[in-house]
Structures are given as C-alpha cells and as structure tokens.
Image (cartoon, rainbow over all chains, first blue to last red; front, side, top):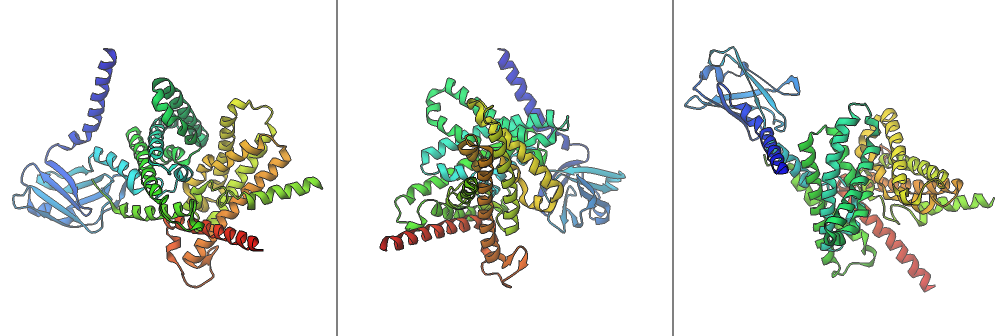
Length: 314
Length: 205
C-alpha cells in the first residue's frame, strides 16, 4: 500500500515538473509564443494590439538567455489582420535549443513587456535522446565502443542481447554517476577524481546487474550474462558520465542521454550484425576477410548516418 | 647483456608482431576517431605510452600484494589514477592539443590493450621486464596511430605535421571523420595482402 502511494506521489511530482514551463508561459497580454522554422518567432496576443508599435523593429530587444549582451538582429515584424498574431523575422538562423528573451517597448501602453520563448521541455529532452540515438550515434559519429562493436556483431541474437545489456548498464551507471558528481564531487571540489569515480561506478553497476540478474531471472542471465564481462572495459559506457559532467546535464537530461546512447549502440550492433550475416555468404577477397571488410561496412554506415546531421524534430 | 637482448625483443614484439592496432585490433576507437593528423596520433600515443608504462610498473611492483580475486578492479583503479595524471598534465601544459583530442584522453582508462598487458604480463613478470613490455606496447600503439595519421593527413590535406608537402589535396575524403573506418579497413587489408604475398613467394621457393 505504502509503495503504491509513494509511486503515485512520484508520478505527480514528475508531471508537475514537466508541466511548470508550460503553465508559466500563459500570463497577461502574451497568450502564446513559439519558434516557427529557425528564423521566425510567432507571438499570439490575448487582445488586439497597436500595429505601429508591433511593426517598429526598434522597439524590440532580443537575446539568448545565457548571453544578454549579444543582441539578435530583427529584420521585420508583421502583425496579422485581427491584430492578435505577430511574426518576428530574423536575419540569421536562431539557435532554437536556447531560451530566447524578447522585450517589447510601449506595447498596449505598458512601458516594456518581456517574455521568454523556448521549446517545450519534453520536446527538448526528446531531442537529446534522438540526438544521441541518430545524429551523434556513439558508434558511427563518435567512434566509441568499437572493440565490442566489431567483436559481437556477428550474429543478430548476440547483437540484440549485447545492446540490451549495454542500455541497462548505461542508464543505471549514468544516473548513479550523476548523483555522485553533483552531490559529492562538486560540493567537495573533487572534480579531478571524475575518471576514478566513474570507472569504479561502472564496474560496480556491472557487478550489481550480474548479481541481481542471476537471482531474479536465471533464464535471462544465461542468455545475457556472458556479455556483462565485456561491458566493463568499454569506452561507450564510461563516455556517458563524462559527457554528462562536461555539459552539466540535469537528471532528466542524463537519463535521456543514456537511453539514447544505449539505444544507438543497440541500433548500430543490430544493423552491423544484419550485414555480417549476409557477408558470410558473400565471396570476399581473401585480403579483405574478417576485420577489413567489417571496417569498410562500418564506414558506409557512418556515411549514411551523416545524413541525420541536420535532423530537427522539435 | 642477456637482459639487454630480451628488452629489445620485448619492445620489438609490441611494435611488430603484436602491434596493438594492426595485429591485435584492440583500442580501435581513437585509431578511427582522431587520427586525422600525425600530430594527434603522436599526442595520444604519448599519453597511452605514459599510462601503459607507469601502470605496468606499478602493478609489477605490487604484484605480490594484490589478491587474485580483486585483481581486475585493482588494475582499473591503477590505470584510472595514471589517466587522471596525464589528463591533468595535458590540460595544463598543452591545452590546444588537449582540446583536439577531446574525450579520448579520459577514455584511455577503458582501453582494452592496457588492461590486457597488465593481466597477461605485468602481474607475473619482473619490474624491469614489465617496463620494457609496457614501453613496447605503448610505442606500438603510438606508431600505429602515427601511421594512420600520416596516411590520412598526407592523402587528405597534402600535409605532414601541418607543413604543406604535396601542394595539392589528392583525396579530400580521407580527412572527413567518417573516412576513418575506410582508412583503417584499407590499411588492414593492405597488411593482409603483404602477408599473403610474402607467404606465397616463400611457398613457391
């Protein structure tokens, strides 16, 4: 009973956290604001506003939240017929991942009105995952974990098992590392111990997953257990906490990054193993047998993954 | 003098017959990821050489004190300590080169080659031999990285160590990040071809 109540509370708290950015927007005169494309911001007003004020570019001060000193150049501003929707067009493409602050002078008789434009937080989190999964795939664009990648991508079943184990270990160890980093390393100025702590936590996680899996689900352990040993000495796993520490991610971002990285590794292994199974039947020149042809196939995948580089979903 | 000879053997084994990159195919990530110039290869090679030699010597000194059941965690922590040292030193004295290598310096901690040498060599042999073995393996890695970097830099941008040698760019493709896979794959195939060719001529004679 107690655990059920607790879990409900946790879910509610999470929901509240996710929804706060959405609720905070709807105040006063500004009814809504969003990015449209990468050069335009659309603002919706609650009441019709003065056309002359809105369309005067000199009335605006716009900057990205972290750098208030760098002003963005607004090219034109237009107001719709009913006077409620304004479109602000910019000269250069905006970095829509950032929160933008817009300040308008003299709007509806008020001296200055300030509002923030940002993507929804859920969309941003999802963006982190998609980025780690496809755009910055850890194997094909960051070149990590290649030893295991070439070692275990011979059969589809092995590849799937390996990918799932990696994802689990990655998520657990990344979250643990996040707690250690933020609550022990930073407060006590022990930042230089990053590497030692993170590798220790990864080994610990692997050992824990090993023990738990052996007790809880022996069948699963028999099929996945052999991969666990390989996981420890792998740079893909240790890279996630290091990236998190570099970028000062919060816990949700960390979780999404780890999930994306694990999923990306699973995807890469699965793709590679599908090709490997076909290659066993192919007639490969003797000089290219084994690793050389595997490297060339991986190179082709890497080039294909370059195609994701401009991807933007939210 | 006998000792001298064996130290040379240990070094040449790391460079030639058991080259970490081309023969053992371990630690491939940096070989593909940042081998775009000879300089990058040299810098990471020095870092790996440092970590390999010092971890080998450390483990070899303390080999009688390490309980066999906790040997792998001990190796990992030893390597992590030395990686932290080289990471801080590079960040302080060579910030530009460090920025180019990015996360790979920290990732030396997960290089399979270093753990493997500790497990297979340093935990059994004397300190002296471990030193030479570590030196050989580190040099082998460094030379492998530099050879890949040499090919990519020469063919990709026509330069060596940043100096314009050719005056034109034969294969711009080689300098692109994703070409790392192709270059390493083609070089491995090339070495295989030499080996097969060598065996065939020997067999005919």
